[in-house]
Length: 386
View: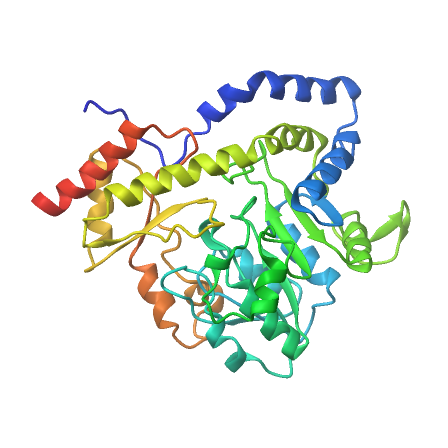
């Protein structure tokens, strides 16, 4: 197959499919002259609230801001501890540190890449105030077990949904020994709507991506929502009456208008991502040197991430690059091993191991079947001739 370079993500086909809608939406904002907190922001918040089935949706400037403001809206601050996963992008731990709290890392489940709920209780101390699960790669964390732990110890939950917009919790997202009454209560709920606060990113590469930065905070608690709305506009309920030290974290009206267009298509795009993942799994089923991701019911596959065994991840990545196939490592260095936290934490063996094994292959909703087959052929070629 004569193949041009295959990127890790190609946003052009998506844009081509909706460009007329996008142009109309953007032009309407340009003609209105209302670029900051214009009508489309409020409309997007209403529409995304209805989509997620949550009472309050507060649009902000980025996914990182959503985490920081979400934590502060829950009253998390100096001297508190927040339990989270070491295996995530730095924004997860960074947000905790930036509100004055301390991230407490708990190792991950090698099958889901998410925080292992069986290890959480051992890390709870009198300073623990919250748990921040990350729905990594679009795969819902074991929220029934996490909810049970949080309820038992009177802890808040803030869900990091940067990679999981549209994902839903389902019975296959948690082992059968989850508390049945909790599992039933949250079944089919969107990630982000299960805990006290959900935080989303609309970075362009996300399943629901803007054409710039953007983020969202969701909650069913009126007081939490009120504080979050104040914090995003310099800590004020009304102009020039600042009650809190807040932020300038407003979603631009143009980005809200773009997201309103895209929100109508998100379920279709996520379904197509799942089909891409399913085909990858089918084609790689006989490649024993690779562990493919589980097709959990609510997974929306922000990334399609395999585990490459026997220390050959980097060689396989280079082989794919030589064949003009892009791949990415999310994440080579767990958060606890980053320079900013160096020496402050013990080893987390599963996280460390997966950091040397994970490799994300190209995925987007319009990825062609023949391209997927070519990628898998090149993977198999490496093992036959490498």
